Image: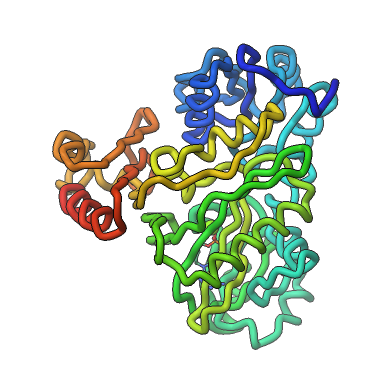
Length: 385
Ligand code: ADP
Ligand code: MG
């Protein structure tokens, strides 16, 4: 196996995980002439539905992994909680990006924070809580704080906000006394993220800095246009994201999320070892999408710096929008009205059931200027209700 060899179109590229990120990866790979294979247990997974091959096993099934390795020229992941052991098994016979070692760090908030400290990138003050002794030793200065499970959290799940020591103790019980980190609650002015793509030869490129708005712990809106963030924060965020990726010797697409505090200080929040919801706008507002970059990274094709050609706003389409009439039967939003607006690009993930808080799709809105894109986004939001 030669990790540096270019894998040309016509080869089959594999992805662990069949969610929407895997689906959009498959679309990007296929449009460049690759075949795709997805490993996911679910018969109706969004990526499995659009892939040439769908291996229906869990991530820990050695036979499924062997089958994936036998049909693919390279493998990537769309799901960050895929066991590092699965990536390591695959890496014994074919190029895997990102590496199991990098994914293992992203899967564990304590390891992730230790990595930030090692890279000299500031993060929120925190304490690791794995034992009753560590709980008792927590410094009062970390309260009020957010108690987060070290593993398996996403979209605000596995988190409890705690104001007092009594709430902290009760919160750790509620989370099942699993390994956690307690983070000091910081005064956020806003949130932003940067997506970088790094190749095996160390070439690194970045998407523009995204400004993100979350609702109930789930990303709701991403805005990317000139002037949406102060220039100094943009520079700092890109530099910090690159040093986090380089410190991991990362190969692939990596998202680094940041908090911007009331005093304008930039603080890193967390990383995702894959394309990210906050980078979906790249499909329509950049000349290279984050999914194409994922393909280029895993095939050793050249990485080119993306160029933004439109001001853009991305609106996440959660299942809640299907229940606006208050009933229990899902009713899709008025796509015909939305698509009558200029610069609206609809992306739906082909999920079988609409459910509240489920990510069903996203709407990328593009325009020539920030004013125009904001005006269209307001109209779209009105139609969505
Ligand atoms: P997830 O893995 O679910 O995305 P995050 O750690 O990113 O978890 O937290 C989700 C959201 O909660 C963040 O985007 C932010 O809005 C808020 N949040 C998380 N940690 C803090 C903190 N230390 N101070 C203030 N707000 C926070
Ligand atoms: Mg997050």
